[in-house]
Image (cartoon, rainbow, N blue to C red):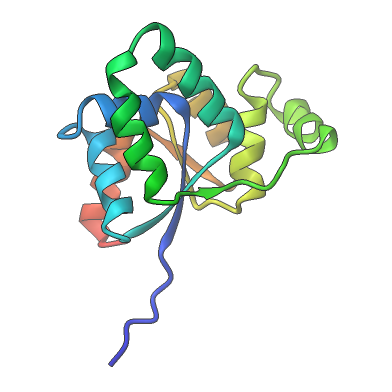
Length: 146
């Protein structure tokens, strides 16, 4: 019998992407592996990729090949954000991370995985999307088999 269970929709921010590429055995790296194994649906935004490229050029040039490998796995992208999309989120969460959260909202993600504690707190109070650290997400994934 075919398993018709829907894959979890997980949106990752730049910190999780770079952490996962830099440390494949860490929690962020395991999330990227779950994506490669098609155990979760992984989403990013153009903003996340642009920020990752900027940071890699300056701090992590050795991650260029793992980054290309990640992209070859064909993560899903959030649709192009309009000014209204960002403005709507900014009203709820006035932060420089509003475009990232707007991307997660636009993809209808179940989870927003981030290493940014402040962002995690803001998102928890203002949205149905569950924002959490990579470790917390993996704990939930393992515990409930979600």
